[in-house]
Image (cartoon, rainbow, N blue to C red):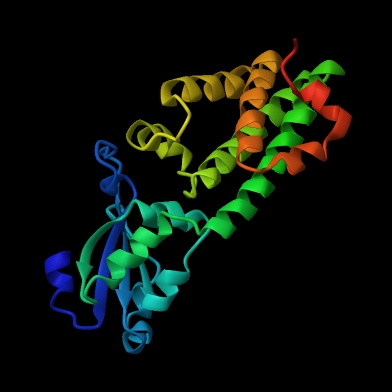
Length: 233
């Protein structure tokens, strides 16, 4: 593909993401997820390939600025993407690298929001367990794990990986201050069983980390409810 693209002047870059960009994650079912970055003039000419999906290829065609603006769920995939072609003297590679590092202010805002969302789901889970609603408690516990991961990665100014790559990411790029195998085991048990005491233990660890990072005011908004959320003495 790279050799063919090299013959098309309008293609300025190629970036591979997904399983083929994560060492050891390829299976017999893995297709190739590729961004083709093109010039503004070529965007219309290549529009017919924008939604090209086959058993082996998932191709997204975008301009340089369009590629730069991609965010949200796309951010992690790009951040761990592999640059196959860069005709812009490193600009494509620079965009890919930037996706892996949140700006400090952006990361702080995101962390505060995710911390509050995590606290909310955690509180609902332990409250529902207390009040005799086991299914609701379990579902809320599962929700809390996603928000927790968003918070922890935002604290490290990184986009949260897709669930598929969470273990891969933490094994290679651990979160500062967290033991990766222990963290994975704990969230796995919470997701599987909704264990109330384990949730509280996790919240105790998160509270300490959050306050050290300057997010204490977010937690203080919970007032007396923190007693229900914290580990039992």
